[in-house]
Image (tube, rainbow, N blue to C red):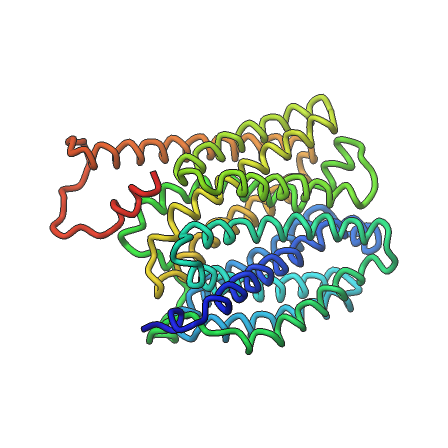
Length: 429
């Protein structure tokens, strides 16, 4: 009998929501610097390229952590990895508080990225471990909801503190420091949920740990995840600048509102679509994303702040529901000893989209300007999303034909004793 089955029901439920809160808190901290970028730029005088570099260093460090230790908790336990990650997060808050220039700020973002990446595989897998057997969708739902809720509250909360509270460069980090210290102290009291398995050292070799039977579906969904998170990266890094320069909106709170509008709509969309078929949720989410991005482009051309925020909300809704549908479709297909590696691989795709295009945009802004860069960036991710959606629909048609026994060109020969993917995937349709 597994450790998970030995836990009392109340203990499992309390631990589930506590870990979800910690995951949301980590993402709250990751978006907290965004409304401060204008303050940093004004005081330290760095360019748009450096601004996106500061943002991207976080995502790149997070990617490194996901690739190296993303599946580590499958081997040594969720609790050990989460506890160590929270200690590193405490260090990053101290670096933010004491930062007095671009160099220390970059260091703080790198340490923060390493901590968040290390924690992501452990927290996401623990919630799948702890979900009630009679509620199999609650784990994927909260896994997709906690990050966007954290991002939304982080952007808005930090923006409010920067605009109206004293010590704008330190107060939000001081509050987060206290929260992370308390979280780190609670971790040793949590029950361990991982069955553990040998091979901890080998798991540290950077790789995408996607089980072979899941790879075709994973590769179909991955471009969509890349596209929607790429738009998130654009507005998390350059959103305040777009609002200020293109739409002529002033104040530090505006940057936080841009983030809140996008990620808050994503959280709402996840809640509204939580009980719908995952494949349909994912497809409709990506369609809403396309409509929203197109609306923001129209708003920038007018320009119209009201239309801009309308587009941000629609795109955010698509972001949240598309991410939820992808998570509900893929994550349940992994066994308990595969979860951390698979979830980490999904987040690798997401954060590649979150970071790399934003860095390219920062370089392009200096050469071509903010408006043209935003337009080309948005059109590019729309094209990628359209291509990815077409691939997703084609994959679904192939699976329906295979399930009906209809021959199809390019369909592989049926294998004896097939894996459980078609049966599990049928539930999702």
